[in-house]
Image 1 (cartoon, each protein chain N blue to C red):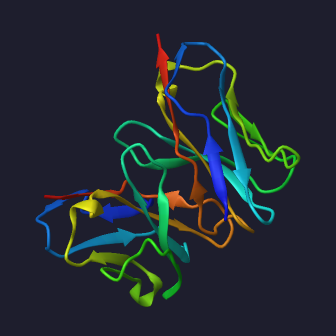
Image 2: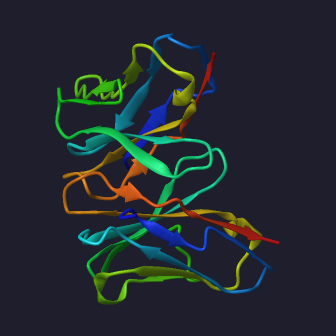
Length: 113
Length: 112
């Protein structure tokens, strides 16, 4: 079945550092890929998505590129802020976006001033 | 607020009691999903509706769990004869047929 694997956290960074969170997936078809973020005490928020190979999703300075050849969707941000401290979840859905999501286990990111 | 709304936000119940949670999706969204999230894990899919039809149920959804979406609007998730293992965050999400699902803030259930 479908699965998503994320790098384990916590990831601790200093402000203005470069952030990468690795995500790889296994799927039978051509999934859509997502990154969700969960800030402390809040619900999951859709951060960005990509629906086909080589698409790049971007939002709030975060980017991720759908790499079919490596089955990956790594999240990157060039200069993190303390306010980026959160748990980040990679997810996929089979077929068109809007179908049920399969999530990775989440990666906690802590940005220190 | 036009986001997904879930009530209650927190529920503490004794083992063996029944509980019901409500989800109000974004108004134009025809798809509605329920997920369960335990501490330190990613959300796990439970069930989903397209309009009022329940189209898929996970095998995680035991016979003690039932979900409804009358008239294709709000949805309820009921857990009968709660067990301590049911303690979790229950998340509702909604979407159009295309587009990433949008999540509510969840209902945290504690079974004591």
